[in-house]
Length: 130
Image (tube, rainbow, N blue to C red):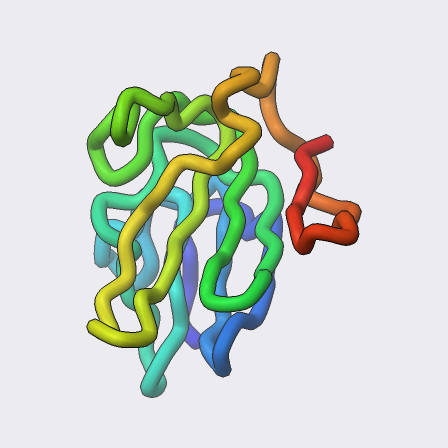
């Protein structure tokens, strides 16, 4: 699987794809900015990645939830006026086949400090930060 240039803090699998998040910025010399996905035998970027360390990943449906210590994702600090504050999600649109970054619902409350864990599936299929 090659080598990352720093620690991998979290792994998860969604729709047959392996995701990694951590303190790394490169894999085998290719820039990935703290998060990457392994598909078809190689690691791929996820847009421009996260703007800081990724501490946790969790998969649900067509999305991978990412938590850590960052205030930007894919080079943006917000999407539709909702900030990327230590949490975001990478979602696949099954109709178009296109993946993109989105803020998470709890970002409106601005996760105070790093998000160390994403856990507890609620009855309405939500993930909660911790």
